Length: 291
Image (cartoon, rainbow, N blue to C red; front, side, top):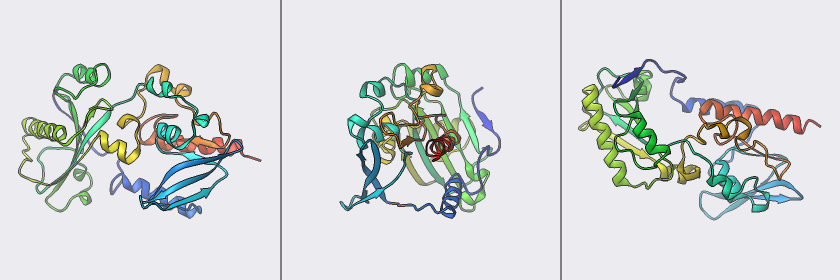
């Protein structure tokens, strides 16, 4: 099968995925949660075996703030928190441990706005018209930019008309790639041209003259925006030795009040599992500090 349409908008909320975040923020605020935005945590202060304070930098201005807590939860990139925010003696895992981890793929992404509607497309489409085994090998066994990539295309405006102006389309491309590859504009443009041609050849939709917005996102962006370990997009690969309790622990092994959530820990990568990891940690904290 060259090309698979996946009908409908499975697990897709009205007004896009951001509405999930917006809903969670509203619930949190209703429960008294206070958000400090535009501040990056630069250091975790430990006293007497307890992580009791974080130091932040405000929008790269050089201005620092500090906040004290009874319990800390690290929901950012696990490796970054361990190796950059904590002193070595408080880290649960060594550099050797992290270097031995098998990572899931990273991604080359394109966000595209078109000034026309597309014909015969659905919300989700998988373009498996090339050899899956070759692409898989170029991700896991011989890491390199794919010679003939498979890719995913999403046209969410097919499901939700509010996501594009009238007569226009919202298009999203994703190519799974190995983490930690060389990433630059020339490489990105090369693959964008490949995707546009493949879309035309397979679906008959030529978008080359109808692009009014384009943004790419790749390894360097995952590292810069999220401190993602080696620029990964999906956490650890689901190998037997990286499953369940063999994933990085939800609890810091050296600090009694420091916990972790997110895709590098239990239950694993993906939006639902990452959200569930927060629920698991919340229950664990309630148990550990019930008195």
